[in-house]
Image 1 (cartoon, rainbow, N blue to C red):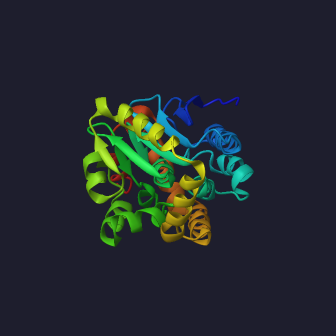
Image 2 (image 1 turned 45 degrees about the vertical axis):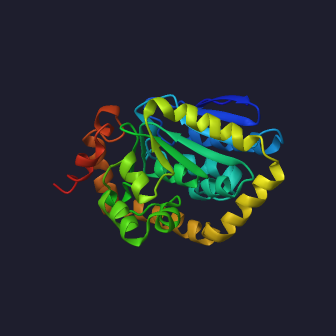
Image 3 (image 1 turned 90 degrees about the vertical axis):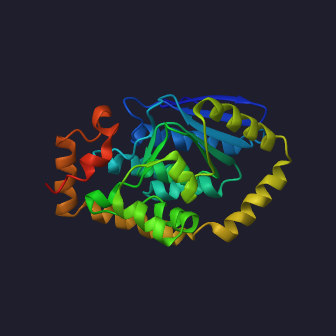
Length: 272
């Protein structure tokens, strides 16, 4: 693989994919292109059973989408999803025979949160990981599977709290809500995830695929639901109010490291 924004290594049935897209791991066309290439490569290699996603940046796992390059990253997603939608790309990962694990340190907001929700399991560093669905601050809704994943995981009330507040949630709260599998001490996270990934990879591939298929049959929302929210997200960004709020956010540092280290206060002041 010739990847620009993801570093990879593999061992004993596990592919480790480290996201490295400075300055803050925004989802743009380069990262989406590399996600497509990585998934295609891993699915075509029968020796790879598990993919572990992590970040080289301790402050950011995946920030969110680059709001200035939406049409570009959607075009890249269509290479695998067949449609202009990163939500359908992420859902492809959920349906894949690959077992996907997100090892989260730093911020996972917006589509970054939706990416980890699309992974089969999520483990986060206590005191370091931050989660948020930020779309309501711009008059939009999560368009890449946030609704479909969060509502069953955390329940109606908490899903509404998360999505309507556009607030930041720490790893302990995310664990208590059911957003992630576990919050672990930072020094224990990597060893735990690596051991789990290798344990799973030692089991027969057919059994892993069958279990995931049956769990998906019980829990994964229909593709039409993901497609609908992807369309609604795109439509909402074309509204005048969304454009005004995005411009105001950019003027105040949105999509810069300094502002996004503490993003929730900025999002709460866009109407002022």
